[in-house]
Amino acid sequence: MLDQAYSRRQFLGLAGGLASIVGLGLVGCGGSGASDAADKGSVAAAESVSGEVTYDGASSFQALVEAAAEKFMDANPDVSVSGSGNGSGKGLTAVAAGTVTIGNSDVFAETKLEADQVKNLVDHEVAVVGMGPVVSKNVTVDDLSLEQLKGIFSGQITNWKEVGGDDATIVVLNRKAGSGTRATFEAAVFGDEAVDFKGDAELDKSGDVQTQMGSTDNAISYLDFSHFDDSKFNAIKVEGVEPKSANVTDDSFKIWATEHMYCSKDADEATKAFLEFMLSDDVQGKLVEEQGFIPVSAMKVVKDASGKVSAK
Image 1 (spheres, rainbow, N blue to C red):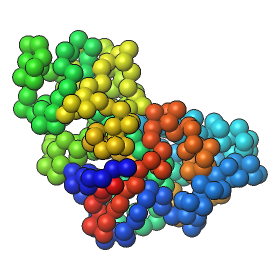
Image 2: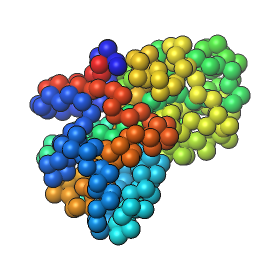
Image 3: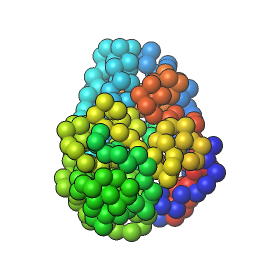
């Protein structure tokens, strides 16, 4: 378990006044607790459920949601589950507006929405994922400190030779504003310091970063662990620590996020059943790790009344 509080991981101004919550499971849609959801998930998948579940949001864990949706639909042929990964901000805005039934996000809804929108939503924290810097195959640097990352992603460090690499201009591939992955990465690297550096390009989705990194020399970006692809680019160490899930859970790798699935308080039965399934042993017991994520049971997160998040 993690023993250290992360002051940098305040998720960019999470609103105060939230009740103290211990553990990753929150109250489910329609009033079911996460522990109840975990118990009921397998049952829900076997019961007769019908309807349409739609989602949008974080591309970082879209593959996990899609894999779970396939299993859920196999058990519930009268339910359709479909969606997109257009970024945390868009997903949260969509679920708040009612244009989708689930909004997926790498960050808390309070960081993207107004308080009156958040109060109508229920959070389900379904996984934890590490995130880290990736560099082009031709880059010789394999370890950067947080201070060096700060210099690169603020535009102060512009050549690889400044951080022990070859004499070549650094190409910074950033994510667009609204990306939960970007918010998590910047919170870990910059803390509370504001940063508006765009880099050489701002990309929409994790898949776009994969593609661009695979075809660009001297580049750097960042991705969640589930999108690492060593055939296209190299994931590098931070402060000498390898970007691995085991190093997230033992408190040695500092850049990570909780994956949230938000629904309306009055969500329909199909949406409730799918979210219960996401917290069930069917998903948490195996599928989460198969997709490159960390089960919620592997970590405990404490959110105090000020909104500060720590892990222990």
